[in-house]
Length: 364
Image (cartoon, rainbow, N blue to C red; front, side, top):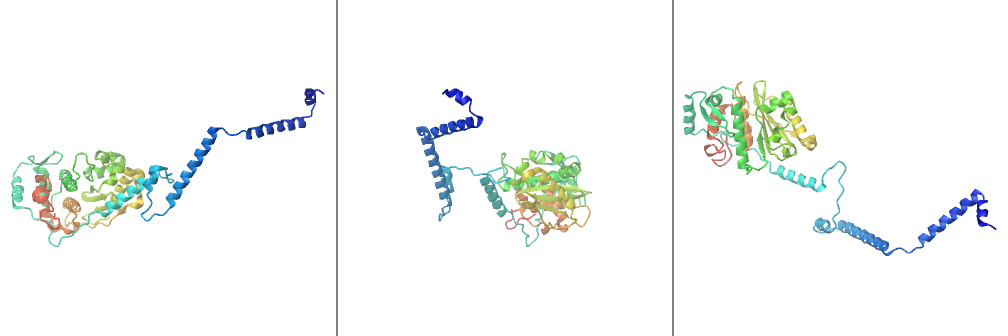
């Protein structure tokens, strides 16, 4: 019988069974072939890897009297831990940052209230110097700011004259003295040190209020405290001028606190809200609203409509030196006006004007 003709005459079901039987026989032959040496090695290596990983995991779960020596495990069997959902950085970086923040919180300054007067008298020689400049021309340069700008008799007269309104030059230059004192006293005055203290000038808040965040978007960056770096800053002073009245906002990014000192006692929640908006925009994803607290801030009260600028500067200095702002009051303003002028002429809070020069509690 002709085999070819037999298969050609077979029905389709028979052909299908024959093809299936041939395919099954081919698979059985492949399964019976002994594995190559290379394949055996791969299986053995994989088995050893599984043993190492298992031993590693069992060792991690073992309890030790002095804690788990995780560093040894990571040294010999470095295994990258998966990041939790929603986190974009290593879990160790997050924990380290939390430890640093807790350390800074424990180091936060406490404000004291001295038993005696909080304002140190102005030395007689400085009283004489201030009296001498009163007879000089208004455009005569009397002092220089830390940035090198001139301060004229006209500028200083807004401060030493009773009931006069302080101008922007006095407020900006004196806040700069306070920041300079803080940086030097905290070992943060180096050229390459990232600032831990900063004071925005008098135009920062008005721009933020009238033009929005975009108008001050680069201010913090230019001061080297922009973005996430802001959280490493200890204190930021923000002078607020609104409706012919000066107040002071103090932001402590490291402690996540905001204080608003107003010598007229108003709440001014809108001012604080604007600063919160700036923080939210500046910090972006690092801003967590639940972490921030607006502290109740009681300011000494003025007894007229002209001394608000002096209260702003005196409260800023009190906060800087760790003094309770309520330690001084309206009765001290005449002396404080003249001390501000003398300290600007002196070029800093040093020498006769070192807040801690007398020993004991710091004084204004």
